[in-house]
Length: 433
Length: 163
Ligand code: SF4
Image: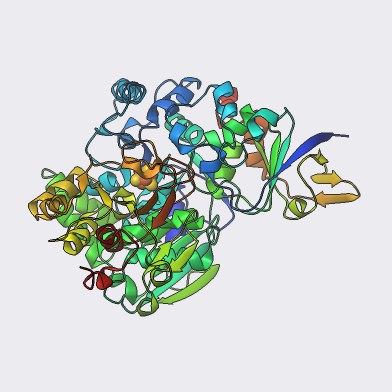
């Protein structure tokens, strides 16, 4: 019996096999096929196939999140076409405008959980690995093919094991850890590979923040990234499912427990890395690449025109809480747009008083969804503007104009920088008048 | 012999999908080849869309196509007449999208340092070799299962052929 990594076990199950080896091509049957506003475009491709009906409509999950509510008639028509498709094919896992960003919503709703497999028409589909699932991004034609046949070919990736030790210092977050890692290994440091995180350092990372790690491994070229479920994962699932699925939360949790998989001790890894969390310092990704990282202290004082807290990377409750903590009782010098990753996050942020704190400081709130993350919705940048964002990507032109500059940082740094009108760590804000 | 001749457009490392096809058009331009071609490489090389001719190839450094999963970053090149992208390495989703949309992608680490834009090269698919001046560079062929999809013109054409 060969010893396998978590990714290999997940792919073996999805491929109906007992084991798989890196480099093999396997046809897998994923549990979930994800698409979002791009569903209408995929449906157009699907129409060219002889199949007509989706093979397993119960495996589709569709959210409207990228341009919500629709900013133009063209976008509105696109949404309408998505709803037509959902009706025609009898898709039940459909989440309307305002529910939130696909990756956040499918976790909250228990559509994806430990031991499952997802392929998604979105590059940050690596996200779900924080629940101990296999998940990877694919293209639109591939999704159409997957709808038709229920299957898709995948190459089994080699696995890189990253062991986390110790604890992050105060004022340093999982975002700093993640972009430090990408800076160190570069944007193609894990191309074609699986990345698995383990070690006692994982336990110290909150569930909200673990998603940053797996989500952003897409920025290191990884096929997927995962973390085996631990007590914190199960607690998060139990608490969240009670809210979103009051009728069957216990059964759902039980099915996740039965399905959950863990890596074998002695599995073979193509690369290993150990990171001491206490050595991580606050960092920012500078324009126009995620791996163009610098210590925050080196770029402090760079002018900031606008900040953005949101996205599937850092638009969760703890991110909004961190911003509220920094801005309570202050006034903004730069504009700040806050967009909760989901309606559940928005509700909890309102209940906790964070929304009031941020609005009082001068921030603007947007509809749960992707917002200006990819330059298609409100909050886009003008030429020459400098933006500090909690998103995962700062490519040229990403948020609108090609000569705008985007810096990426953790949400507390975004908030502090908007208070000061220049890049700054919250710890240094106290000295500001 | 199965050699074909192609004019080169050369680019550097880490060219991402946002500069290959702008994200702001992701939901407004999907299939129309003329529109796709008009925005190809818009934020990387504004002269490309007008200057590209059918059969041209793109030669690039490492990690071509990193970033988003948008397929237009492949189909805009197909629409512009690009015959192949030959790079040091490819981002994985781009590589899959290319095969599944019938765009030839060849990993050949040496080529980019030997050519300039406007040069011409020859590709020999049977021998899996690229010829230029007095060099011949080999590349590795795709696994059979995957090659069938590329040869069919992409995964949709492949499934149509099976249906
Ligand atoms: S928030 Fe940004 S990165 Fe995340 S799914 Fe939406 S557009 Fe993509």
